[in-house]
Length: 140
Image (tube, rainbow, N blue to C red):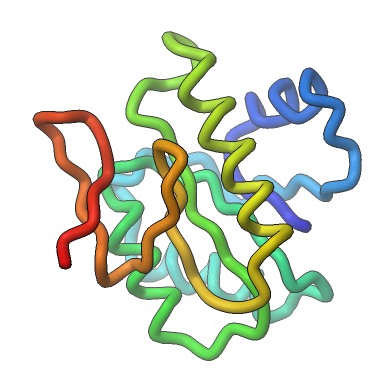
């Protein structure tokens, strides 16, 4: 399983005694500034990896857009995009919980691109970030 995201993730993984993952930091960028070129960089990393399970820590502002982009590609394996509405710096609980859920789903699913937030798993085309409630929801 490969993780991509913020270096704070290493602290979460270590505190949870999770030592069976490879951590790769592709870039640290506010998701509002994410470009198509950045999404292709993520896709290229996934397609050129020897792994088949990925957890991508992603800012919530553009998480759904990146998931939709990746879901249109032919990816052999599981890709989970996860984030936190409240940054780890301010609320360790949500970020840690969401990451734990993402790890569990990544280990149990066999194929596809998914969004994991708030203890739920979503298909990219069936998910929206509800800013007023602070959660991700199904739209269909």
